Length: 227
Image (tube, rainbow, N blue to C red; front, side, top):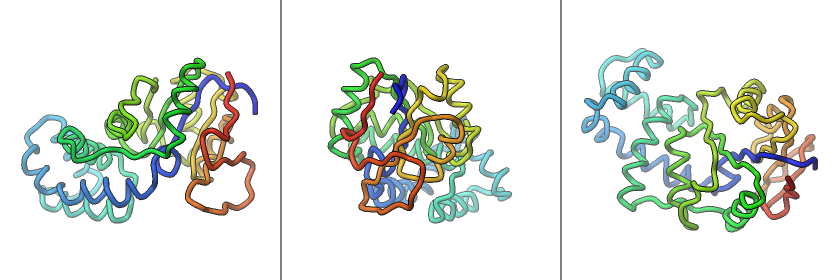
């Protein structure tokens, strides 16, 4: 592996178990969505998100919007304003102490080590930037946000498109060859590789992925990151 100046990470299946998102965060947001919309519809940020959802879904009253949001969540649709609304609901849960983010046990030690060696650490996820910050601010290993320098969501582009990774490299301000991307999804890694990034495929969930042009690891401490 070539030297790297920055590591960009996915969340589900890479730093946190997939089950946390599917079995905890998604149901938490879905169950609270109707009440949240009723309580906070008049706030400017929530109003902006709801208006954006109306335009995408082509539905006009709040109840119909909530129904469409729940359908999108059931389908795991990567709709940016939905992700923003989920993030606001999770924000309430984290602040109430009802949510805590589990991490794979090798993640926090590796992040502290890489950060201490001057490697810039960032997150790229389909979840909103707010949701990303919340996940790493309230982990079982404490607040890890001081270790992270940037967060990227689908407003920079979708994760299976090479142009998204080119855009992130420009925003980070580094040559693509100096950036390492960690993910458990082959199509995302393929897009990052096409953009000139280095890649490592995390195979944490006992999967046996097909052959592909990516290094593989089951733990962060198996990744030979060097500045």
